[in-house]
Length: 272
Image (cartoon, rainbow, N blue to C red; front, side, top):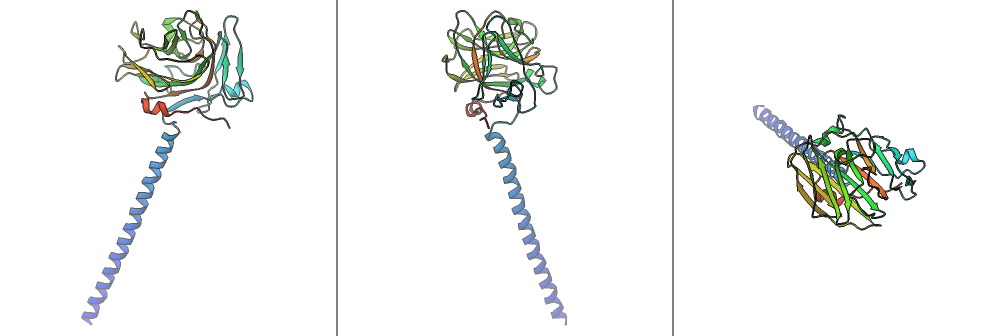
């Protein structure tokens, strides 16, 4: 009887160990599947480049102007105004908008006092797929960016924006007081009448302003760790004294300074 009891106890112990190991194997597989799912979710967010995306105007809903000018991330609607005689504006069937030389589109929800967009003062990215339709004499011409105004202004209101000049595209950024940086040389080439992927990046930690144009980059040292106050994201005639016609396919605002590799992979959202 004692031997039988010992054999029975050993059998129970072995059975328990086997079941425990089987259960442990199940948990191991579950943890692996969960990790894979999380990794897939992260990579998916990275694959369509929406991680850190605060706003995106794709202009794809061309059923009416209000819908075309509504951000498809947070539902912010841009306002439209114009100065001067070239006030032409068109929502195009291909998911773009065409702006005459006097037109501005702006979102005053994108401002430095906002909890959501105030982080851009420390660092962020504005990416735009843009086609410059003409190259007027004079300039420079400022086409999109953060502006401390809701109407075309002057140098003091241009906080973070690329500019078009005869030498190519350059960048400008303004900090508090008299702190600012810009490009007097090293402009990046762009062709009139052809789309270009243009991004301007401010990084307060590294004190750099970087311009990206179709895979090419131009860095500039920044004397400031923070951008000046801004009242809006603006497209079109940012500077009152200079006008340029353009076509915009899409514009995005990210809450972080994106890398060159990330920016190179961004593609505009396709219309449905």
